[in-house]
Amino acid sequence: MTIAAPSVTPSTASVSPASPVLRDHRIPADGLYEGPRALRRVPEKWEDRPYELFEVVPQGRIIGAEIRGLDLSLPPAPAVREELNRALLEWKVLFFRGQHLSSDAQRAFARSWGELETNPLLATGDAPEVVRFDRSAVPTFENVWHTDVTFRERPALGAVLQLREVPPVGGDTMWADMAAAYDNLPQDVKDRIDGARAVHDFVPGFARFSSPAQLAPFQELFPPVEHPVVRRHPETGRRMLFVNTSFTTRIVGLERAESDRLLRLLFQQAHVPEYQVRFRWQAGDIAFWDNRATQHYAVNDYAPHRRVAERVAIAGDRPF
Image 1 (spheres, rainbow, N blue to C red):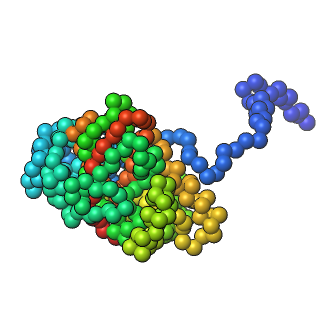
Image 2 (cartoon, rainbow, N blue to C red):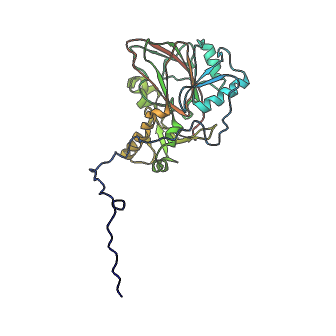
Image 3 (cartoon, rainbow, N blue to C red):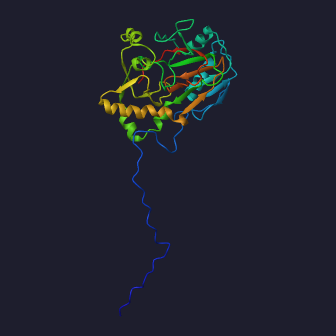
């Protein structure tokens, strides 16, 4: 006996409408990436302890904190210095409102973190270690993301900046967390740059506002140097992007076009708002930042008003 197979009528539940067809589309490969970002303020397995000697008021999710309850007119006691250093490692840039430090006090505070450096390429204040930025009509180092003095074999550990005179509006400074910038790179980009080295040179950064005659005498003093594209923080061990628009000229071993393309991608990472904090200055405010872990950007939006700042930089180590 032959049994006929039952007839089957497809149900609406088992039939999917044809998927709509989209036109050809793509985003250029070398750019910023949309979507969620991994935002870690501290390294993995870091012991995140409360602060006991002052108040820490976060100014951003992963970078930037205001420190309240300290008078910086005298160098910090050892216990305060230790806790401040931990705050610096965790927040990368610290803000102190209304300190109005003398030049001597500003240098003394910075000296708690090490030897002070001088910079013959920039105008000075009342001591060789004090760089003075008097910005009104004369163009100087602004409106570019950079890390200070990476053209040195041992770039600065950090810097202590005080605003002496502020414009009525504008003149903010922004900082970017370069560990977060590294964390969020696509894995294929990380694979390309881990172990790579890049050349840093003072000339392209300073040539924006200095003449060849002004710069030429310093070429022997500051020859081009090489640093790792990804450096490890000497205190936290965290990996960080260490290239910047002002001073990084090429990646060693790559053809010029390939180097330029890769550097453009890496330079853009400082532009991601999730990695940034922005500080609105008042006269007498202090910012103390970890130059190893950050880039910063002085916003030039206050003309024709005057902005006067003084910076003291702390000598650093050789990046690795």
